[in-house]
Length: 120
Image 1 (cartoon, rainbow, N blue to C red):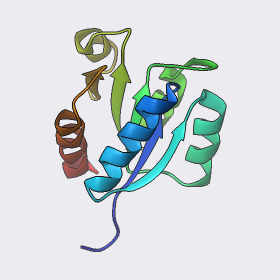
Image 2: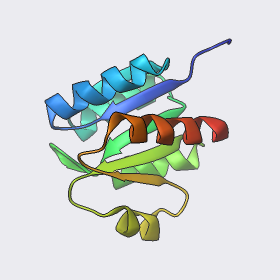
Image 3: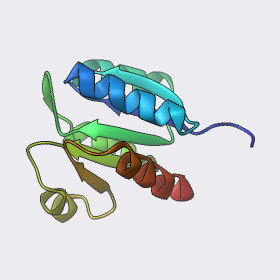
């Protein structure tokens, strides 16, 4: 299969973050994270660019939009994962990104990753 796609997970609720990482790993992807704040997610991103990122909109130290914008500008597929914003609200601001509402069933997460992977 060649190189496995790398998925960065940024989520400040650690239980959800670890669940997401398990789901991603079980689907056969390489996981980075979970990162619970913007600064650690940015640092990880600068060290090794992922193919796909699953980002909680609100992290421990701020809103994830600047990082998301940088990622999208560098062709990383972004999937927002939020309890605060609806997928429709995210789509208005970032039409090229996918959005999932929390809590999100693992099958829906995997489905989004696979859609993102076809673009990666």
